[in-house]
Length: 220
Length: 211
Ligand SMILES: [Zn+2]
Ligand SMILES: [Zn+2]
Image (cartoon, rainbow over all chains, first blue to last red; front, top):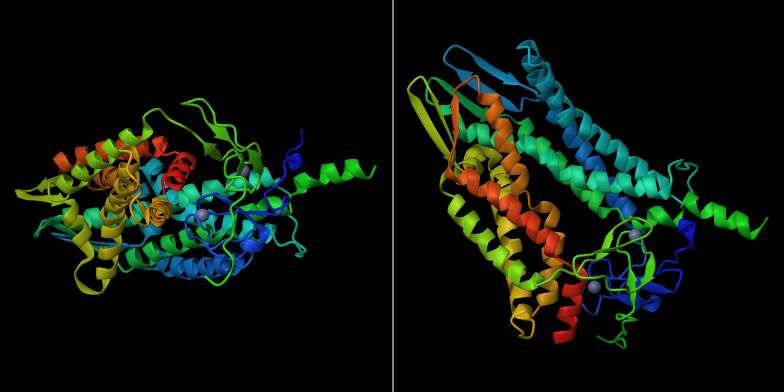
């Protein structure tokens, strides 16, 4: 049958605890869950402000993360400090085009896509907004899970800087130090994760275009 | 509390999907099978045989691995007669000088403190249940914390980061994996196995019944 045929806890006048899943009567809104202590809310409507706040903080950290060097390399004869994009270009000049592409996708394209995806999801659930998402709730839910899953992996760039800085300490021969972008990049990843976590995915389904077919069936 | 305490509803026969709020009648699947949400495919119930005992065993394995991997070298590098070996502790302290020490704290938290805390919380919550005792005080809060820390446990990302670091310095110097690298590799598998065994619904029910 259509997906919209499945009732929600809210339809039945119930609140499911977001953490432990226990069901409570609607009158329990805003009081703590009796099993795990988490504050009950049927829909975390206030969370959209938090989503945007973290989103903006993440974006503001992401800009300097791309303008300042991530790594500073000191060799016997040379000193170089390169941003993420410069690092990828250097690798491409060495002839390693595939690796350069992987770095560009992982460190530039994916973070950018994450900002776009969270913004799209947040806009798509505004019930009164003029913006109407064309993707089905199912697709948007998949997008949300993808963002949640991929978000943490961006931290890999910071770990690589940490590993390289600790590892490549060969006195005069070669040494690597973290650049200022390592800090802002890490903050950007953390803020985007918090932004995605603040998002209440249950709201994706509330203003779902999937609900339209059943409405049409009722009023032919 | 000044209000009259709320009564939970239908904990035996109703379950709501945490991701999309769809409401279902509980139908506990066979051991090894999973009940998923028909709308968003979130796993709702996934009973495993002997899950609690295996979770406890894996947590202990995990803790031993982290603690012993902490100070052993995980990568070593040599070039032109110079040699350096790095432990996870060194990688955490890579940012320790100057204003970047906050990053050191963050890296240490994400790759060591959070994963270890999650394992200790698991033991605290699951071990008494496995051995038939009453849950320890605040076990529900501990389990809630365990779940919310999940995205912040990044040991597996760190292990992959080692691989990338290796590629990056391959033409600069000779790099070798140390014992700790392989221990962290095993740890990633252990964490995956444990996440797979963890059935939220069963654990919440067990916590509730024995409280
Ligand atoms: Zn709860
Ligand atoms: Zn669902």
